[in-house]
Amino acid sequence: MFRFENIQNKKILKSDLIKNAHAFFTTRDLFLLSKEEKQPQAVEENRKVICDYFNIPLENLITPEQTHSCNIDIAQKGKSYPNTDGLILTDPNLAIFLNFADCTPLIFYDEKQNIGAVSHAGWRGTEQKIGVLTIEKLVNDFNSKLEDIKILIGPAICKNCYNVQDDVFKKLKNTVKDFATLYEIKNNQIFVDLKNINKQQFIEIGIPSENIDVCNFCTCCDNDLFFSYRNENKTAKRHNAVLKLL
Ligand SMILES: [Zn+2]
Image (cartoon, rainbow, N blue to C red):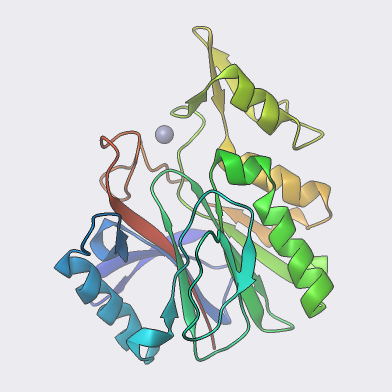
């Protein structure tokens, strides 16, 4: 179950599923990145709000340069992350965030190991199964067990809003065994459910469905709350998926 909370009167979206870590999605109130050449002042202010909330210095707040790749790295202080769309977090002194405007944000948390990750799954990331690759890294490199991994699937463009071309449809269809409920054809246009394609990928590798919370908010339908690249003429602003361990 998702619900809104506030940090300094700025809305964030949290889920009951993850209790022992800070795991949430920001809204338009608290965007942490803009793709403009120079970050607007609001970004600096918002990053400070987050760092104050976590009680960490600004340099401990880490974000990668996302390129719709399936590259996943481990968050370390002072390191830069060009061409990276998944970050694993093992250090409670750091916080990580990734950036979104329609693509699907994925937050992972393993309470037993107290580690987690954030990944960026647009259609390219979903096609390359970046979420599944993130889970495999947690399992293979950090001894997580599938049944211990909790996953939040955050605000992203919904099945009513996300129409795709035939080639993208076919690529996404091939990522899961059971695709029947994950698309719809209306007026000869194909619509896909990016959030639940990711969920289905996770279920098919053995994540229990009760470990996955899918957010109902759509970046397009709920454009007053979140940024939408499609609905806002390629907006530069990004809301975020944020993770900090306790
Ligand atoms: Zn929608």
